[in-house]
Length: 354
Image 1 (cartoon, one colour):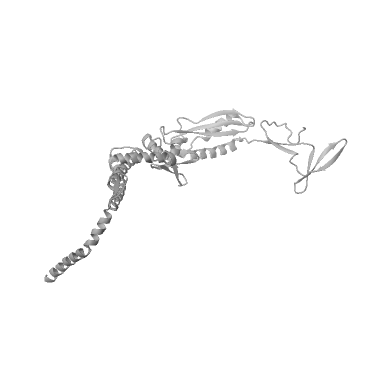
Image 2 (image 1 turned 120 degrees about the horizontal axis):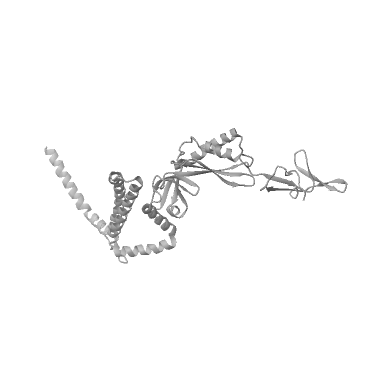
């Protein structure tokens, strides 16, 4: 017991001696850290800057925690939809960060809110000249959060990209494709460009499948076969029923369009694929043929001669009662190809007079 008390007394005296020895050093360090610098109306020191940085870091951490708590507990108990819960949680996070940033600026530079307003005015001028794209993305982010044309979980198509919305941030929106590839889209593009939201409003969507059929096929049989192809396809609705439209009598094809409705618009690619497989199978069984553009080759100035390798070497011209052969350097002036917009069975595709 006596030894323990002796050790405690020695420890206390050791701390006292250490403080007496380093007291002057600590005092000078405190003076340096507390030295005030002045720039315009703003005064700051190393201590105030450190404190402001700590306030900002704590604010960011606090905003994330509170936004998650707000999304999981409060809004979930209020039976709000996931998209609205996400929007409210993000707005809560941004408001907390903004207030924390103002507090950090006031603590670090000892400036009032009027000076901060002037600072933001100056920044807005810089944004107008050099950061227009970023400012446009930020504005688009607020539009998406408040107007909510796109929500988290929606299936969207923008340009050639299609996927599910994973998150809507202040500057960008992240979508996940069927190939599990994340695409980061600027919010300004989400607001300005043409965008298809497969999950917005009415959950039903219409899928149009165009088809060009050979002109020799019976149009009534084509219609019946297309309707049969839509029967029994997964996620295709019976009400409204599938419908076939005869769109056009083209020169080389009859143009049809099969219309089906689905309540699973996210699966429109798979539905289209299933129907196309069924169409190909039923067309083969019924003897129906799809149409393809035809090409006519017209040969001018007599017949052509080819070598054993199939290379054009000469042409024959009719001169009086006899024939003469002419060697060719190039056949570009002899053969012309053109798309047929009108093709009949009695056309001569081997030769045509000028």
